Image (tube, rainbow, N blue to C red):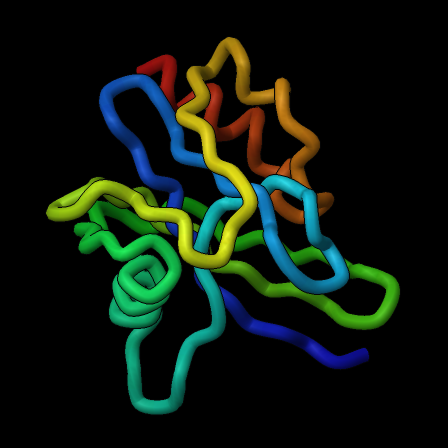
Amino acid sequence: MKTINVVAAIIVDKDKIFATQRGYGEFKGGWEFPGGKVEPNETKEQAIVREIKEELDTTIEVKDYFDTIEYDYDTFHLSMDCFICSVKEGHLVLKEHEAAKWLSKDNLNSVNWLPADISIIEKIKTYLSK
């Protein structure tokens, strides 16, 4: 099975997490943590900063590695490295997504997360409870 390696930004502002709704592709309409593929010769941290700049016209700061999600979809295996990030500059402009929301730990389950992303929601709730 083909493996796709991606990075995802868990953008935190105080006690809320930024979630985006896919606007394209096979999983259109599902909610996810924004991010994308790592390009040759860039670190995972550089990739997530570049992807958020491209997708949301915002500069983020990578704070910490959070977790790696390994998930088998029907046609590929996803390996997604997730990082805790904060907005450094910009206003999170939706360029590729249908919608976005800031979610607190109490309403993290209010959106229809993609299967891989939902696997770390409980861990994020614990993180937000600190």
